[in-house]
Amino acid sequence: MALKCGIVGLPNVGKSTLFNCLSKAKAQSANFPFCTIEPNIGIISVPDERLERLASIVNPLKIMPTTVEIVDIAGLVKGASKGEGLGNKFLANIRETNAIIHVLRCFEDDNIIHVDGSVNPVRDKETIDIELQLKDLETLEKLRDKNIRTAKSGDKGAQKIIDTTNRYISHLETGQPARSLSTNDEELKIILDLHLITLKPVLYLCNVDENSLNDENKHVKAVREAVKDENAEVLLIATAIESEIAELTDIEEQKMFLDELKLDKPGVHYLIQSTYKLLNLETYFTAGEKEVRAWTITRGTKAPQAAAVIHTDFEKGFIRAEVISYNNFIKLGSEQACRDNGKLSVEGKDYIVKDGDIMHFRFNV
Image (cartoon, rainbow, N blue to C red; front, side, top):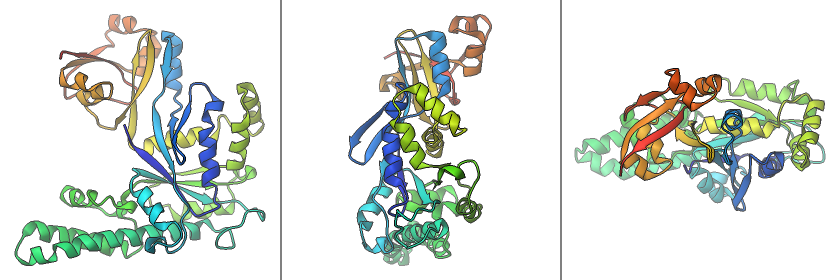
């Protein structure tokens, strides 16, 4: 499932350091490999304790986690919407992603120059927000203007496009992102084709110093206040610490280091899991002696379409799905025990797969 999450932010806020920490996830655990497929794109495995517990019961030959795709996007500067700096490249790359990780610098360090001369994450956020909104306004105005002549001839479809684009234009001109505008299905269908940047879901990542991980500093508090009405998650990470963790190849050394910092796991693990949720993704499992595997689906996926993630033939010849909930499997200890206790259900084409379901598909091609 080719869904991407882009890392964005001003220069020198920690984007590349964060990406490099993610790229070394392989050193943290053999079960969470990372594979670079382009210089700025990586496929990162999603840490999932459920997968490990299933594997400990089934004892398969192979364990296969699910993945997300992360894109390290070039730093943005003021005027990007007009092509300043790497603006055109930045905006083209972010348009191709499905969600945004917005990195904000929330630490003081005289050795790391800030492009605007001082640390102010709320100002930095507004700088990027404005550039993204300006680019979306340009996109909306082009579509509106393209339909004016047709609408004047009485075309209702063209008039609907004009009315919809004008609603979004007015909303963006107030400084609000497109994702915060209430809309109906008809309007959303028109807008989705435009791939508006500010329509994408966002996660704010505060890059902090070590001391602020457990005791939020003034910059983090300011960010939380600024985004309180956005229905967006705010995560804290110390990329300097994450870099040190990533350099430790011994798992026990990592655990000792994390214990000293009073952390239960690396911050990048929380980030990967939050990114997965941000993309509206869920996981179902298949479990057998050869392989225990996590599969990625979009929330709300029905059984035949979930089967297609394994192979398109599974959807074409779908007959039924045998389903065991994760909790029941763990409690009873095997597929057979779940069958014997009536905890295996047989579902048809309309079954909506739940996060954590253990699935076995019956099909005929």
